[in-house]
Image (tube, rainbow, N blue to C red; front, side, top):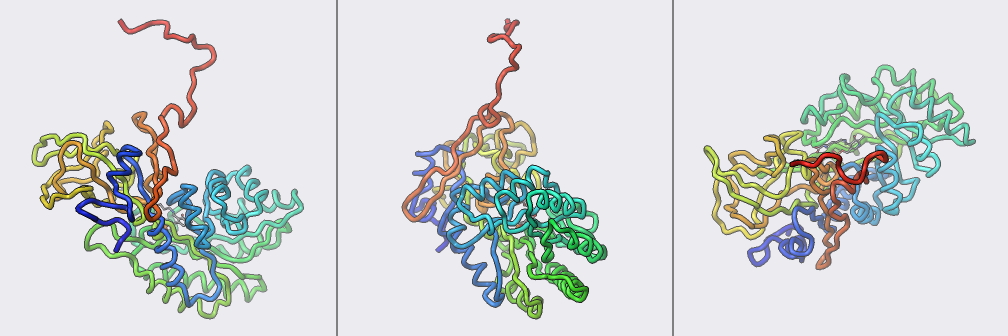
Length: 426
Ligand code: LLP
């Protein structure tokens, strides 16, 4: 039984009806299943059973909700962060600092300092200058910053161009053929405890072959570094495993991934780090919405829902598919375009798609929205930030409020402006 399922003809998250949540919280709203989070976290750990020494860090960017991070912390997942804000989220969720790895191509000095002051487990360096800066900041505090060097293996992950990160023309990591020289120089800095490598070639990857190519390149570098006398005792293999978003599309084979990793790294004698995001959270969340209108269209009707591209940006950004379903399906279907209220044509969730027949006022949901959903929400069109709800068994709780657009950035008038506009519309 999946965590989102029909019970008595009505969609539930675990034991809680989505109609109840809509009545209590309103729509649109993200709904997460704690059980689904736990199960995917446990499945990934089990798949890596043949990897003797490992640390699992959830990629906070996929879902930074404190309650979600806490569920995963209870599964002994740390955090992969990419900003001072994510550091804050991870710490507030109760993740221990030494279980946090700081990735990201543009860490600022204040963010590096925040990581140092918090005592995080390691920094994944994206380039040499960053390593020099981190070393200087750490040395000034009488510290040595634990760090890995991120390699760009020049491998095409075979995923959407916007979420590919391991090709030589992408901004991430240092070229593999320069890595030895850069490692030599950075390892000599007193403020750095450089002790390994990191790699991450992209996201929503279902073909394991490019991952294996990248990991073998890392293995070659581990051996070369050790031959030069370097200490290499951690390798971060990143995240990136994909999930099924539509019927017939396969999930990445997590068990095959575990077997591949175990085989490739068998003689590395090392602790491996993993940074899964989507794999853990995507299928553990849905976006609950209500149909506002069914508007006649040229070839198909438009189902206008109250969720929009500001709430779930993936279709507009990556042409991503999210299954659309009625909360109380009648069994009848029709072909329709599913669109949101935002004033651009990009605010389209589905085109000419055969979906559950829905009418005005009906509740519906978008599946597989637990990763990169709420995380990427905005207040475009001055829409409020979408709230989030966590379900655990028969309990549910709001874990992020709906926040009015003007309050998100605490807007105010400039001090020289009068209380009322000088000219009023006639
Ligand atoms: N580690 C690093 C260094 C990353 O850059 C990412 C994702 C991850 C781990 C986690 O990757 P995952 O396991 O979730 O694939 N917004 C896009 C996805 C962007 C992924 C960015 N980096 C989307 O909605 O598809």
